[in-house]
Amino acid sequence: MITLDFDSYNTRLDRAVIKNGGEIVILSNKARVIFFNKNKKDRIIIMSGVHGDERGGPIAILKFLENSKITIDEEVVVVPLLNDEGWDKNKREYGKIDLNRNFNKNGPKFILELRKIISERPIDQFIDLHEDIDEDGFVYKLKSDKSHLADNIAKVVECKIEYEDDHFAWGNTTEKFIRSLGCKHAVTTEAPGKISAEEKVEWNYKIVDYFLST
Ligand SMILES: [Zn+2]
Image: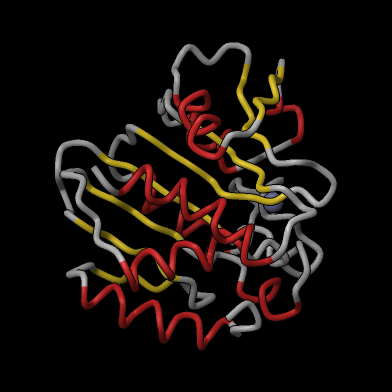
């Protein structure tokens, strides 16, 4: 399962999405943007696989869509596996580009396409699933963030909260872009690095389930 290549991943994903009545948009790098409950008032976006060597998030989303059901009454936009090349080479970057530092207008074409889709309507909640090789797992929270989203996720996966004065100083992250659109409930999670591949999937699965099941 963990060695699933990008195309095989998408074959399985598409099947699961169609079964659940979702709508598939394909970016120029073949990454999928999936819509469920399109045009419901509230809108939630889940992203994963921005870094190609972080396997847990994409696999967790695939497992969720294959085995479970979205029961929330909101528009759900899922970008389950963004970095095609990084995934197949099992490396963080896309070419030489870190997509979570270049999620801006200078990014590759598919990033521009995705930014456009994301910008079409206001976003109520955003989550980007990552992994950290050295740490025990944590959720980033900006000190200026007054929402409880990071706290709630930390409870779900029993991890710590990493408070940041300004993680936007890293550069153009997905979360920075989403917040620039006015979304106040945005969070970046980092699954633990030193657990097994299956445990990383489980960690992310809990978060996906928390967002998509009532
Ligand atoms: Zn990452």
